[in-house]
Amino acid sequence: MAKKRSRSSRSPRKKSAARRPSSRRPEERKVIKLKPIYEQVGRTLVQLRLAPPSDVVRGAIERLEKCRQDIDDICGPTMAIPIVPAPPA
Image (cartoon, rainbow, N blue to C red; front, side):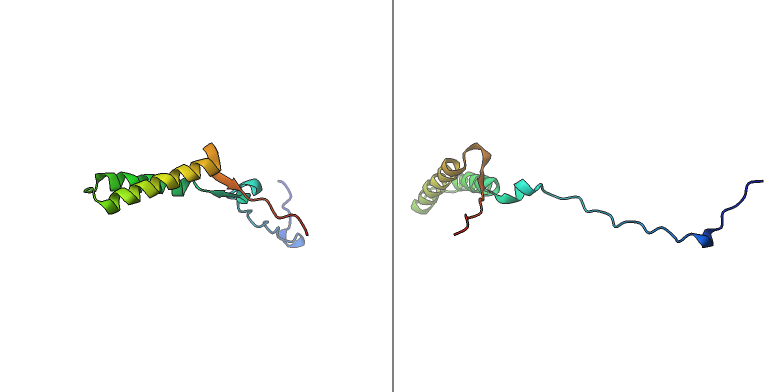
């Protein structure tokens, strides 16, 4: 028969705290993503194009198309603006 170890002589092991997985890599945190805004403007344009035409609707469509074009010009295909810390003065 095998010898049994006494548990009282050993202190109970503490489990280490579970590490929360990082939801984003550090380099991803330094970016402002404009794709959700770009997509929302696109969905709104679809709704406006289905609305009865009026001067207000045409003006809104024109401005929102310009807005989407500006976002595209600023961000390019990434639809993100990198944030770079200001250099020390």
